[in-house]
Image (cartoon, one colour):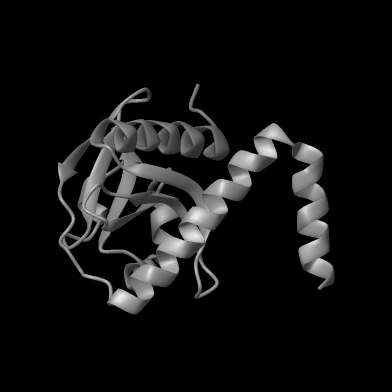
Length: 155
């Protein structure tokens, strides 16, 4: 039986996150971007570059999503992460490609570099670090994180 859309997307994201760790990239899931979009995974590479990884669970997911080019403005590298059943010929050639077999993923095509402007990189790095720290703190103190989020919404 084919896994459902959410299960397939989650499996691809987990495999891509594992690959990020193997590559020494610090990856954070579901990162809100300043343009209102949300990156499925945003990886901070050892060289200080950011890799945005857009998970696609199938052809329909890709074909109905016209917003993916908007991620390029907030990453030095843009990748699609798909599973081995995805028709890779649908994907543009000027974007990196990660392919998952369910448990692991590998890069089949490196992403071309689109360097971020220094001011944007600094702002994104601050946002990335803050988000990661808040999420880590919420694991240790779930109620404190909820209180902080509520307080930030009020102010």
